[in-house]
Amino acid sequence: MPRFSELIYTPETAQGQAISKAETHTPKIVVPETIKPGEPFKIQVTVGPHPNKPEHSIRRIELYYYEEGRPFNPIRLATIELEPGYAEPKLEITLKLEKPGTLYAIAYCNLHGLWEARKEIKF
Image: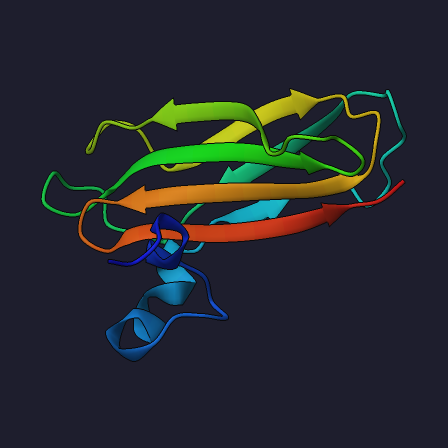
């Protein structure tokens, strides 16, 4: 029985048929080039280009933060549920972080499973 973490695809771990899905299913995390501790900044997570029909769509995006030095990680920052045909796979949020760490975005496609991206945050 596989561990749940083994069921999440990344561009680095995708194999077989999943390799051809990496470009259109892996979340893209956009953050400013300069981030200062304690100051708000905007980030954006998108997926695609990807179909947006009931039979094939991105249904959920989750955003987590692994904060350096914190005893228990990750911190769930945001979750968005998407209705096919209406909502596009895009999450925008303003964050204020005190410590460096790593942002993780997870996207769920109803046909091709869970896909992960990560972005290191340094000050």
